[in-house]
Image (cartoon, rainbow, N blue to C red):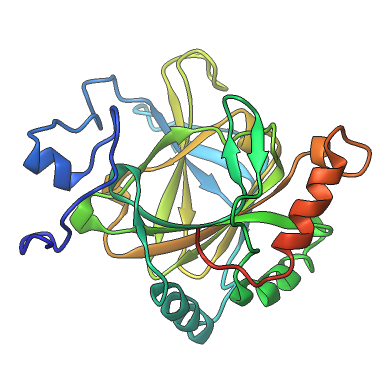
Length: 274
């Protein structure tokens, strides 16, 4: 039975990951803000494509930040309501760092680079019209998602996702996320000495409004890690992330046959969560 205080009985945290539930029940200390020196924080300007900050001396610093596309009001308020209602009709599974998830995709072992169809039955029906809409943008022409992951973030659980790079063996160039129910911030980060200024860790905060679509590609996809920090979740947030196949699984690739099979199933849009 769920605890009365937080409304959730358990979490899916493993290893070094934690959320407010296990931090309280197991006495775990959050790894966020663990004494690491403050990085150089920039804000992404969608209009200019620049990462911008003001130094302590009042001097503006900026550098080009390619590989981000923000499509505001991608879905309407009515569509948002219908999408979340449909998601909530299916079960959510506990996941890492206070998140809950619904997976629509093949079974993958990234370490061993193995893919199994398992019980994968396709992307959900509600995504069919969304994919067609995405493909109208010049950057997203030919985008064929083979996997969809719905995530549920809630401040009561201390939901977050640590800085990471998505796999590039199976997943292709463009990562697409639709943000629902509340605004948030995607924090892009580069480790110390690897960024544009070559000093402390650099972070670029990308505002991600409610009902918007965000695409990461190029440098933002492959060089910069992305995260959502606990302090940037103020109320329930639901998102859907779509991934396409890498060239290895497309025509001419070593695993073309498997890729064709995966796409046939995915684009049937008859899926249920795994």
